[in-house]
Length: 224
Image (cartoon, rainbow, N blue to C red; front, side, top):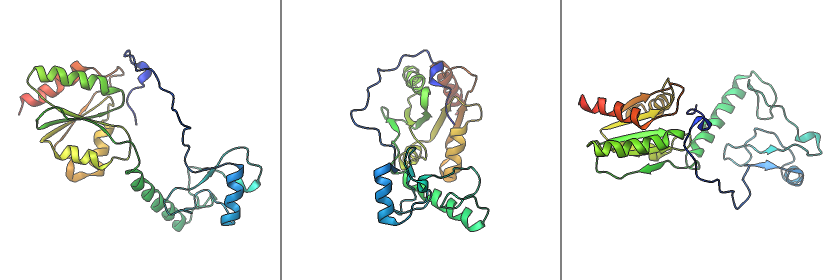
């Protein structure tokens, strides 16, 4: 799930600053590391949890060893990347992936939060909607509707998202997605926290606009 491609936008972005350190590609094994891994472990299997963190090691192309190859598939497999329809293999994978997601909550980028007002209204959005939301907040403040804003920057959600929702009486989930997938994910992951959420989903094939956000939130606030 994502917002409309940012390439469709007419807004200019800040110049890209190239990283000053190598990009981390996760738990990868090159030729040297793979040979050392075999000496230490005596084996290597793609989806086996060797470190207890639910994340397997993966090899990179070019390693001169038949033992480094593996076949990825979308259907069932065991921790050796071998096709399997056994119930125990499926459950083992699902349990590992759940632990992997739970661990990721503490590692993914935290949301960007804009708390400028003493208000009971919050806005949650993501992606390329950001400039439109910030502009809408300025327009609404001039019209007497003050709102704070959280921009989700990664999935799975971190605790910061739930803490933000709990602060407000009303939280508008603004997204350029016809089905309101971000809103659905928030409701699905924490049913107890969704009673104050309102979905504002557009999805008209065009970039999000501050005018639309302002008008939608104003309509909802007028009925209260």
